[in-house]
Length: 297
Picture (cartoon, rainbow, N blue to C red):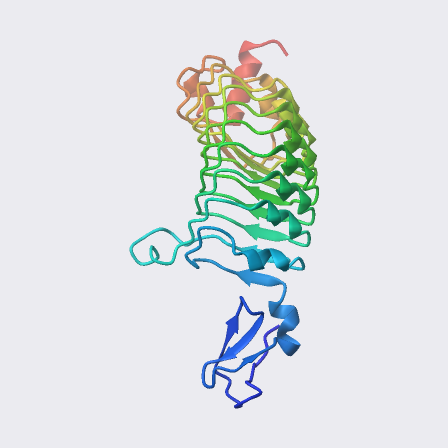
């Protein structure tokens, strides 16, 4: 809902929001006045994109009622450069914002999240994409209500086993990191629909990934995967499966059970021998025929 805001001092409608002071300022007479009827629309959200920040201002942590906080940055180019946020430190005081539902921290210089992030238990959306994260605090597993977790384009080498505590998660974006393996606890994410883990260094998938019965999109391209779990065919909700540019040598026969697949990509796996690469790139129907012909039913 939007309100026509009028200055009570001079009657002008040319007003601007003053986020730091929680109210409006009249451009005409410089009068400051509270949100009034617009409080519900403005009080609980704070948009601080490109304020030229290097850390989060102390006054932000006093607003414990905040539900939406955006501290992300626009693309770093000649136009945005003077204004871009370049936050490199998240204070433990972030844990005071216990009402937060959406937290945007993308495109900063953050190298770690403090354990106190685990106190923000109302979070539904958390994005720390395109930062310098090398590790992920285990307290991330306390965010039981989290729906979307964006961690793509960082330097993360491994996920904590506590990631399995995010049982409400529907989207996990960990692409373009340095991850070498996925923990078995990934199988606890029973509501996961999207898993993007492309452009990492993953060699092997845990069998527990086959427990993700609601998974619809699985992106694993540009890793170092040599084999898939034998029961991969139990992921019958899959619509999109991308395995391009890995080191696959064989495919489990159960892969032909993925009847709902609309997009299957496997090019760039020239090491495949079972079935042969030239068979695999023709799609699941041809793969199924090859198995029927060469292996006992």
